Image (cartoon, helix red, strand yellow):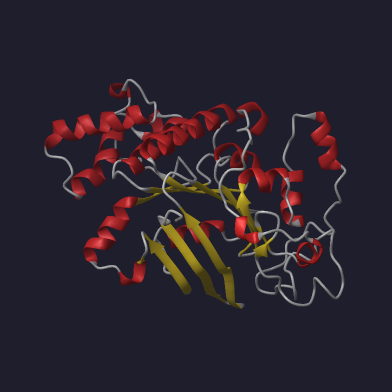
Length: 353
């Protein structure tokens, strides 16, 4: 029997009212995150990744659909269950400069939640706990950082403090919203390795938001990738399958845009068909049929601009594409799993980022 998910999104929709009318930022998303596993949500800016993450974290209430934590819908939780959810699901923001209060020391930042929930007694215990948290994220010796203010830290150190703060509540799920995008490459790899160690040692699940498929490839190699486009998931499956054998034209375009150090692979990526248009359609006026068809190199009139494609099984992953659905080779879908592909190798940092 498969393990039950920590987090489950079912038919999640988020509609915002604007001067030009309602805008569906997220248009029906179904995702699951299990303990100790990584789900990367990938796509261009404005595709709905952060809106999905904020709903999953309970920061915003979705227009429709359900967010479940350990099998219980957020809307049906009592006060005690809601408190447990708030402590178990922590959010790491993108900007390490804006996420920390400039008037608080690192010690004050790390212990605010501990004091609020009565998890420490006295200053000595709080200071010892804060020091342990800094060691977890490789900020050592902790005495060098506890009494520092954010402006005295580098970007990488600030983001590690953000991670340490999220770990203070002993979380079961971390939602990382572009948490490495503003860091230098060397610091990015180091932080990803730290997060990976926490995942393995503490069995923490991750909903990892990124626009960078290279980062997704490195961090979620043993997990899954869900590719979003204009509020919908267009491809979802095991990371080695999605990266190594993409099916949706949009996923292929994203992979083709990644800088590839291997000359042969770089040449192959450049030789792929170019997008028909670089312009992203407006959410106020989505095209008929597949929303990607105005840009899609595989566009077929009468097929792609008719009905919206459904997310369905194809080659060990789910794909929303009329052309793929028509041309796919039949497989035994009963064998479909989203576990890591047997025999696949985790990419090295220098080849992934």
